[in-house]
Length: 137
Image (cartoon, rainbow, N blue to C red; front, side, top):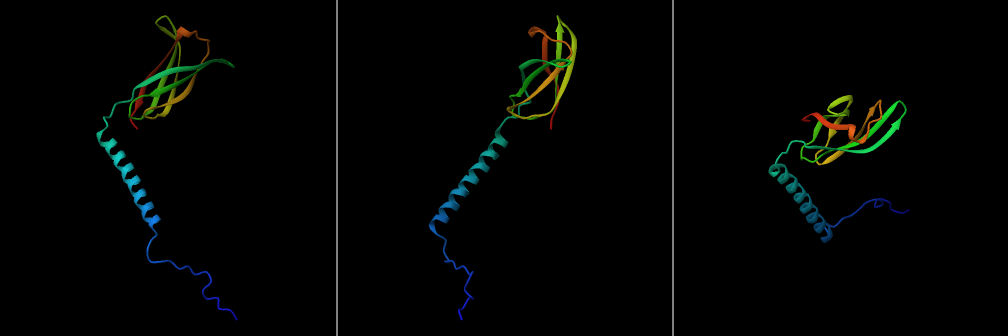
């Protein structure tokens, strides 16, 4: 009868192979570098309040009205929450129709997209989009 007591047992040398040491050192350097960079940016970067820019990306008639799609970008290094964008159809200096849309977040140095629906078709020079409020998350 055959002795099966050694089946499934793994034996290892006591010392690590050189490639394991190189991998451990390189991994440690990468992790330390990333943590150092993130820590340095967190301490040294000036906190700039959110700064918004709105760009209209599409105008399209839809059933029951007119849709204006837009991007709102935040060029600052702080995220803004509950960002309210107001769209207005203007007749001279008077707003004849207005609608608001609220974005949960507009991340720092990023953008978010949305749309506002109007009942009447605005001309190019009649639309005013602006950010009216935000909160700090």
